Image (cartoon, rainbow, N blue to C red; front, side):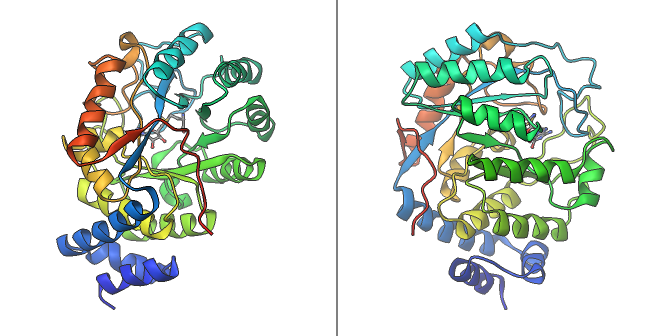
Length: 349
Ligand code: SAM
């Protein structure tokens, strides 16, 4: 079967075999990409119209106990100037965001033991109580099931935890031995069972990534049915072991976005900062390939440059207000409208 026929098959049946996925990733060309993005764009337009959900992201700590080989804030990077925002700082970011029309706050950070279950739940509870019309999303890595449950009980309803790769051997090439795919997957299962709208995802073009690994990612997502999918190109950071590795391809990222949209039509798929960093028009291209969310940064300007996951991260030199305006303009330039709404996952029967 030709790749375009496989894309039609995916659209109809919502899954492909491992061999079919591998064929697409091994042999796709510019026409296949164009075809996949056109199909994905039609699906997104039909489900969401020309509406893009805005999520305000607060990067509240760059302290991390993990040592992921790709990440600029890994614990071994002694050159990072570390910071934490306290509860009042975080609430202030949410207040500013609320005034700008945000109805989802994403609390993201490294795995920082300072934010104990009690502290974190206190913050989530306060945001949920002060902004009952808003959704709280948390993204602070691998925790115990008990901690996840406590976050849910405190009012969080969404959790982002990219699986990074669904293959254990590839996972071991990207992380030290202390970090395992088995635990990452345990976390994702726990989150789903507790009732979170759960986000998984990968970087495209991580070192050693192959078509077979990408096929495994697609098959994992077919089964797991994430409500949200985070996808962006890998971009090297100069103070990590992957400093000399090439960045992931924007076109391959767009292809994976489009295939995810076709496979999971209802999913919330952000057009990521990494995509906007890799290419000036990256975020617009992401939307045209099927993304329906953008996540402007609400963190205070003073800390932006310290949350450098990769080199050249876009938006680190503009205030929250400017960043929001720029994104709004980018979306309007391609005929999309930014909406003030919680934008919960909704499955079509
Ligand atoms: N600690 C939380 C976690 O592990 O999910 C959230 C923060 S973590 C830094 C957020 C995501 O950034 C990771 O899941 C990873 O995919 C992405 N990331 C890290 N380094 C990156 C790089 N060099 N290029 C692109 N994305 C990167």
